[in-house]
Amino acid sequence: MIDPLPLAQALLRCPSVTPKDAGAQAYLAAELEAYGFSVTRLKFGGIENLYAERGSIGPRLCFAGHTDVVPPGNGAWRHDPFGGVVDNGVLYGRGACDMKGAVAAFVAAAAQADQRQRLSLLITGDEEGDAVDGTVQVLAWMDTQGKIPDFCIVGEPTCKVKLGDTVKIGRRGSLNADISLQGRQGHAAYPQLADNPIHKLLPALAALAAHRLDEGTPWFEPSSLQITSVDVGNSARNVIPPQISAKLNIRFNDLHTEASLSDFLTEILALYAPQADLQIHCSGEAFLTEPGAAVERLTTAIAAASGVTPKLDTGGGTSDARFIARYCPVAEFGLVGVTMHQVDECVPVAELRRLSEIYLRVIESFAA
Image (tube, rainbow, N blue to C red):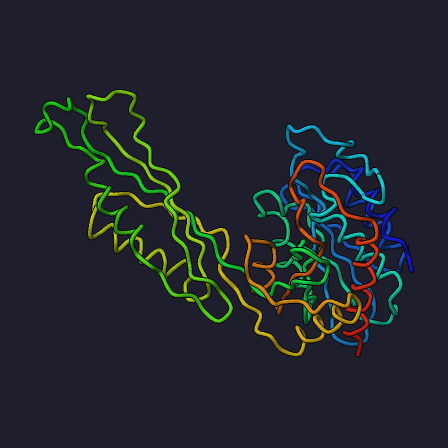
């Protein structure tokens, strides 16, 4: 076995906090080329990305991941967050779990696989940021080049307690809405001379909060609408404010789309607060990869290599799999995610090596 630990340490020592790359992509490209991959460096909007491929036999299996990380934060780390230190069998560093560890594990596994087998990697530097110059752009390029895979594995930290326990075959969508409504400022003692925007918007917000979007599906929990902010910018008790703004977030399953939810919000506001302004941003649609032959190959290989039968899951936030799902079937599998984005983010070295063994078994399961 090729040890993924040195690969992971080298990546961790690149302080690649979004949007900085800090040499992570160049290092990874050199390693992949050493293992016989053809590497194409792709830069969009100042973001470093790469696409690598090797082999010509069998279905095209792709691994997708990212080398960018979130900031280390203000907490006191046990070790340098960009030091790649191993202490008592545990590797510490920002990105050890999410997800430089998985990238290193897959590269180490790919290095040992049959070089004739079709393998590709989509590695972005823009997953933790706005995600506009990373995977989305690389996929568009891959599409024009005829390089869309038959199946893609995203190395996000999916496992909950034990390595191998969870594979994600879908994700909920996420929609944010900003609602604003203008009124007329005035003295609270003379409401007839003012126009209170709070009173005009509250019925709409109450209706939204009371509405149950759905009862869930066999693969998804019920969709959730949460009002996350209501603000009038008023520090006085006896002044009717001139405006009100509200924010809400909807985490939705595959019974809904951005378009259908936009229509729903528009209808509620038209009924209760027709003068309100609505602005919508959807960071990702819900998607589901129906269990089938490819997912079965993945879960069988994981169980064989780890001794754990993975549960198929659709929980959590969003990931770049939401973009990949537009082009091909995709599932997510990686490390235990307990420490991701936390101070002292880490992964046991034994777990990192075991993940590489699992990835190798997965790669072999997709051979023709």
